[in-house]
Amino acid sequence: NAGVMQNPRHLVRRRGQEARLRCSPMKGHSHVYWYRQLPEEGLKFMVYLQKENIIDESGMPKERFSAEFPKEGPSILRIQQVVRGDSAAYFCASSPRGVNTGELFFGEGSRLTVL
Amino acid sequence: SQQGEEDPQALSIQEGENATMNCSYKTSINNLQWYRQNSGRGLVHLILIRSNEREKHSGRLRVTLDTSKKSSSLLITASRAADTASYFCATAATGANSKLTFGKGITLSVRP
Image (cartoon, rainbow over all chains, first blue to last red; front, side, top):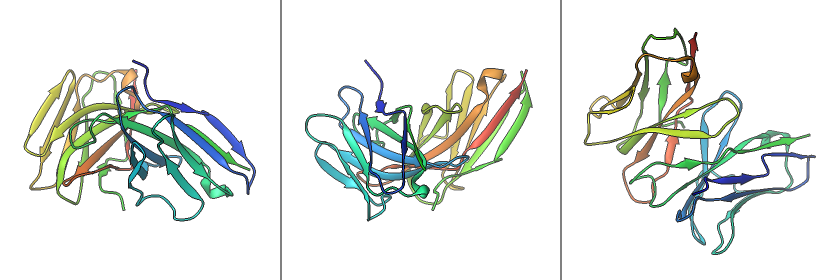
């Protein structure tokens, strides 16, 4: 059973471009979470999705950021018109039934650098 | 704001010694989880303790939970150089559709 797959692992964008980060959860996992990590800091929650539904997006900036988890295919975190402050590691995690019943399985992260 | 706050922020010990890391949180929880992160990698789950549990063991790991003090501790016994990593506590608040809220982490260095 393959783990959580994130791509790209590294992404470089210039200010104003779009960044699109993909996450394929573990097989059988319908709960997906996105987190952001700045250097030397913990993980900040961004968004929680179940298939085709956004459950909690309280950690996601209202502008420029969007997330989806379609019926078929990976979850996508999209950042439009990137700024230098968006430079960070973005981690995706999945779970079969949510965190109240068990752990999260994390991907290796996508590291975004905005020039 | 961060739910979990770990202390110390950094810990350096000799191989073979025990490492104790503490975590405090603010709200009612369903469970508390500890994760480990090696530099440049994703997080790996270590252990989960539910709100109605007080202590749990897994190999060289021992975790305690005191819900009256809203605190938890992680003990790693007989540490090894390979235990060098960052350790995070994370809480799942009570209620449906919860998410994990992470602390800032503890950097553990184990000297060979």
